[in-house]
Amino acid sequence: AQSVAQPEDQVNVAEGNPLTVKCTYSVSGNPYLFWYVQYPNRGLQFLLKYITGDNLVKGSYGFEAEFNKSQTSFHLKKPSALVSDSALYFCAVREFWDMGRRALTFGSGTRLQVQP
Amino acid sequence: SQTIHQWPATLVQPVGSPLSLECTVEGTSNPNLYWYRQAAGRGLQLLFYSVGIGQISSEVPQNLSASRPQDRQFILSSKKLLLSDSGFYLCAWSQGAKNQPQHFGDGTRLSIL
Image (cartoon, rainbow over all chains, first blue to last red):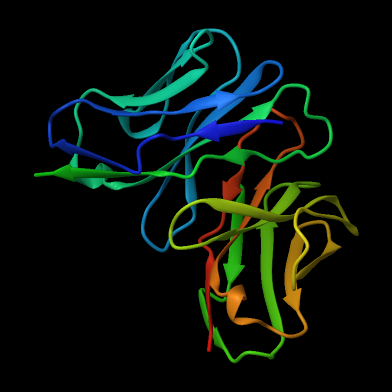
């Protein structure tokens, strides 16, 4: 069975500093990995995905994520945080060999707070 | 471009009343459709998914049901709401390929009194 862990409930960072939101996953085979952001009372917005190829994936709003197969991690990063990045972030995984369920497995979410 | 619509945005219902939440997708055909519930602004629980008209898979036993009467319409229902049905309900769609992301509606906040 596939699973995702986001070990930090909350991450605090000062505006202008780099940010990292951590994600580790567990699957039987190769993973498809996704990051989403959620603002209050809104749905989840897709940020980026890793399918195959380059381990560094670039996405929306200046975010990027690094896939590390040996550490089974897919951490979200941004070189310079903005106050407007404050939101709830979700990591999600789907296993390459998942033929039936056709749904993503989501982590529990990490709240990012960027202080001015 | 594709869009997804959910309504209503908020709903307050008494215990024991029925429920119908609707979700429609535009700009694509034969999407996979999903209903999630999010409790306390945190993790998402998959309730139902559908890969085609009339095809519904349930993830967890519960007081809710889902239907897909048309290709791009997904409905979440209940005959008698419980207090525990309160939450934020999200509809999502994706293309059939496994490497495609899901795209979410703006959700319905359901409060049961």
